[in-house]
Figure (tube, rainbow, N blue to C red):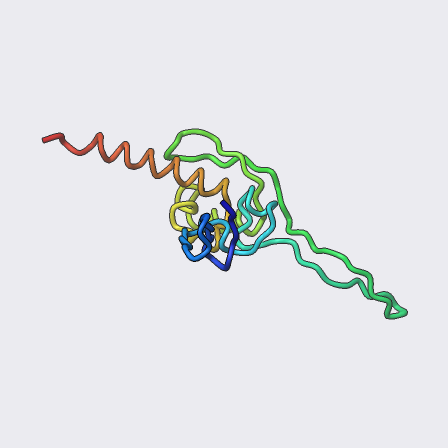
Length: 139
């Protein structure tokens, strides 16, 4: 099988060239960002590129990196620490939402755009579902 990626859909080419089956690409891969940003909580921030311009107007390529910190964040739902590479902007957003649990559950995929964030969201949602199933009386 040959595999190719076109836009937001992956195309799987079968042995016969006229049969093409489309399958959606994972949500975190739809939006352009660096692999570095997908491993942490960057909240839409990423590396930017540009020119450093000297007094003589000579231009040299440079990059601006986001302010990334390694932090442990307490999850009320899971009752444990979650460790992330997180930007200071994402920390502000987490504080504004009221904690890491609310941030992960309420932030849309386009802003989250993180494999680590999606995994943590999945664990939190599974725990909430488990608690809801316990509280519901069995009939």
